[in-house]
Image (cartoon, rainbow, N blue to C red):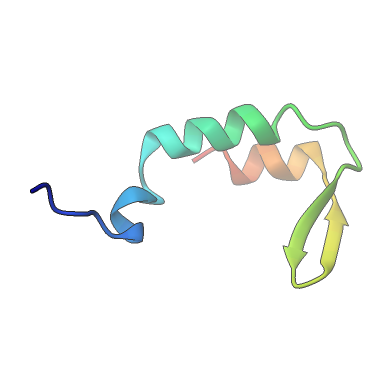
Length: 56
């Protein structure tokens, strides 16, 4: 029987594949697209801020 991986193991934030997916999706968004912030709060997307945040 194959052991089940934990959520942390499946969604490793340092994994370059996950970052690549985030870049592909988020960097293609038009400016002002509502992005979830927390709870019921959203904020408009900002391409410059997204590029900076995803440049790691």
